[in-house]
Length: 381
Image (cartoon, rainbow, N blue to C red):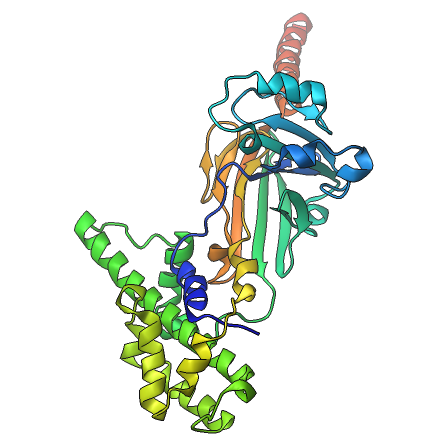
């Protein structure tokens, strides 16, 4: 196994930034009044995949249990069945497109479900023009209906949680409170209320510094883990593997580790610390001649789409989303799962027209009955 210290650093430093997702990729969830629902994934594809010679070939891209179509981003809203034909390709190449055609081809994969629990049992994401099921991230959905005669309220919730092996050996709670961690990665709870712009900047700068320290601590710990996992390859190690593990735990929270940054030679700081502590350059020599990335972080950080939600009736509470009058837009990324479960919730209201009709009829009947009784009394006199 090969492990380059700069590759490790690049993987860890991404934790202090929002995950970089394609803004055109999205996941649309539609909730119906009868409790059924659907989920549609939209993601970039290529001419090669869309021009699959047969439907069987296309099954390897998107399973045939999905309703599949494609469109051209920004050209029109028309969707076409797969695969892409030569005639369609020729007509598109004549369009005055602002980007290369290969960057504008979108695939839409939609599936209907009988209930929200069935929908959330499987999560997917686009990977190299394919729709793949997500590992180690689980979702759980609920849909509640509250009948209130004149209207019915629908509350939909979907929680996402990382369910794989532990990723971060140094926990965040050693640096920040739970509320601060949640605010940094999800925006909730909002800790900026009643703060001036200057006060907000000071608070965010302080949080960013602590997040950077947490990142460095985990980065250092992972480097040491690489050394430990390959200890038999270390030339003339100054101490035993067991002793190295013990010293690692005492070094990880040292200021020179926590406050290092890439611009000041993060890798050099770490290797120099190991060399100074053990009076040997054996570990430095190993790290300079080996390469490895930490793919365990990729699964979490690469997860996420723009999450759109369409509710029945009129939305009365969009939660953390933004409602445009038709669809609620949420941000969903793997970094939002770092503090724990991330939940999307919305409530909408459907007017029960039949309830108004029945109520009006009852009122009219009551009024009619009142007049009828008065008239009967008059005739009786």
